[in-house]
Amino acid sequence: MNFEPGFFSRFELLISSIGVVLGFFFGIILLAKTSKNSKANLFLAVYLLTLSLRTGKALFHNYYAITDSILILFLGLFLLIGPCLWFYVNLLYNNNASLKRIDCYRHYAPFFLVMILTVFVPNNGITNLGNFYLFLFIHGLIYCCYSFYWLVKHPNFHDVSQKNVKIKNWLIAFIVATTLIFIHAILVFFDVVSFYPSSAFLFSFIIISLAILGCQNLWIFEDEKKKYTNSTLNNTKASEYYKQLNQFMENDKLFLDPELTLVKLAERMNISSKQLSQIINQIENTNYSQYIAKYRIGEAKKNLKNPKFHNYKIATIAFESGFNSISSFNDTFKKLTNTTAINYRQSFIKKSELDL
Image (tube, rainbow, N blue to C red; front, side, top):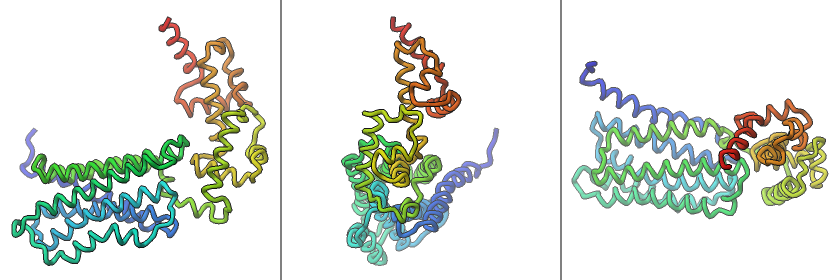
């Protein structure tokens, strides 16, 4: 098959443009829905728009000449990426905690300084800017490393609640993606890889990957404070009640009671059912029924693997695990494990026979 001389050039432009278009699209969407209670989304929007501008400039400059001052202006945008990453990680993991303006001024000071000096800084060989380029990339890498270090050292990092795990995985993916961008920039600086089209290709790959992951967890971008505006339950109290709730589940195994309801469990904890629902929703990112079902299925899985229960009927194990309906058990088991209870038990029986 013969291709026209310009086919691959147009194909490169198409692939490279995907990331730029998606980056601008998601950045504008986030800006449009950002409220004063969702500061994390604001920094994510600036991050996406900044990288989209940077990559868009690279595509444009590949075909058209750009003046020295404009080149430096776009180069300085690198100084926005690291701080945006840090503030986004910090605010999202701390549930949009308060942010001091002085912190923003301090972290974004290098960017504004470069913008002011743009007209005085020459480019294109007039002055050796090698050290300046390297400073920009190392500046971003430092933010990536510190953001990851802060996340790992956070007291809630080892919390295994569903919501925390998903937010943690999202932020790790976000930090890794940003790290790849700066590592690639350093490789380009040392002529290990070519700038175009690898830079634009990498950006498109990262934006598409983050978009897929983000679409699977859209709740991450929602403003939770709006939902519970009138609630008197603060984060500290919610964490204390959540620990108590887990003790009731893991030590007392209240989930084994098929008549257990949200109201009964709330009365046991001396809080309102609305507060209990808020705790489960905010910390586990799920509702009461799904939260209890997770423990009941966990109990069923343990019994299905236990040789003492191999002769028990599936219905018996379901009832022993707190379910009051075999159909509800089967549907929930398949949803949470992607297999049936019978197949799950058979897989462990076969494994035991092979071990013997």
